View 1 (cartoon, rainbow, N blue to C red):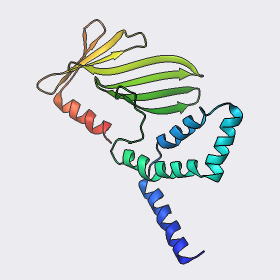
View 2 (view 1 turned 90 degrees about the horizontal axis):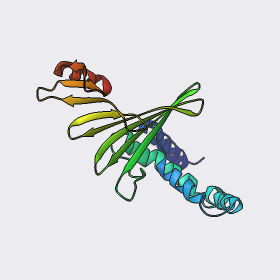
View 3 (view 1 turned 135 degrees about the vertical axis):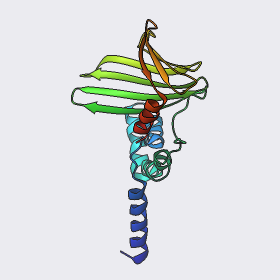
View 4 (view 1 turned 120 degrees about the vertical axis):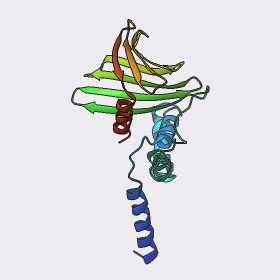
Length: 187
């Protein structure tokens, strides 16, 4: 191996290791989804072989995701390859699994604001859904059918009041408690 090759390999390895991010690989997924729409299974396979081994499109997309796009997202920016709908809505999703239980957490950003959608599964079957959205300054949690489960409102002094579905106050958090919770959430 030549000196230039060793330096290039070392440089590439350090970039990959220093980014410290394992991300969603949106660009690679977009290539894969496009590949799946080419035609029948044989056409998809031929295109895959060409794009993976002859013209290394998958390799280039994976490298771009690992080094550039996932690193941007990891270090606090929005991934420029994140999917967006025609109306400007974008969705970022994470899967969490433990044994027979799984959760899919989606952050939905659009013209009307941001929402958090948490879908739970047990042995692959849906077992619960929670959607949290802020509407007119009030954070509302709803189930899959849209029934309100709770509301939370930040008051002028910085405290937060939580009400159940019937509007009965079930919790109150001082500004100091809110600051502590925010600090823990950001760690």
